[in-house]
Length: 219
Ligand code: DX5
Ligand code: ZN
Image 1: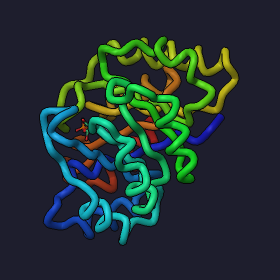
Image 2 (image 1 turned 30 degrees about the vertical axis):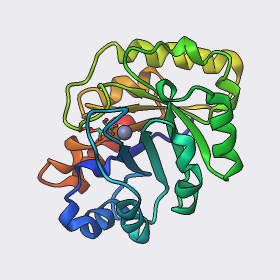
Image 3 (image 1 turned 30 degrees about the horizontal axis):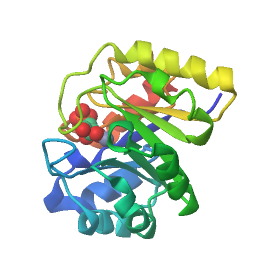
Image 4 (image 1 turned 120 degrees about the vertical axis):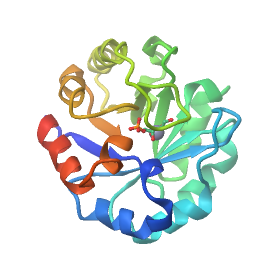
């Protein structure tokens, strides 16, 4: 069984203390940095862009898991490769030629991820699963941290896990939104490999200890 992954979302970090919070994640039991890029078009919010990612990258010692909530992400694939992204995830709903987009991400040396909004069924990936390194299942509507977890996510994780086993691929399942110590165990039991946690980690009194607790719940 593969090791389960915790990816703290830097959207919930203190941007005035970005180096401190990046080093906190370095020193924690976390596995990846989750980086949320929002354009104010695909989602109704603007987060941060390349200069902020560059500042995080300068200090980060763990893989950068970049989640693009932007329209026409093909425009920026090279930029994110140059910025050191290890995984680049685009939204199914934002890509007209998703197969081509995934190919371009891999051609730039990154792992290719596809994110699904809560209303998008996992079955849309049936013909593409062999080409996907990671599927990110949104467990809230993308755009904001601190939202309530949507329970239908468990079913989607189970369905996706069954699809992956049926096709015999190594695709990882990541869940993003409203993750906390109460749902983390059930999510990994349903088949999730990686969990993103933003506000649950950074709003806690001791984020490093909270990351360790999450790791303990899913291990
Ligand atoms: C939401 C983002 C998430 C967000 C998660 O659109 O994709 O990564 O930062 O934050 P929490 O864990 O607070 O729901
Ligand atoms: Zn995200």
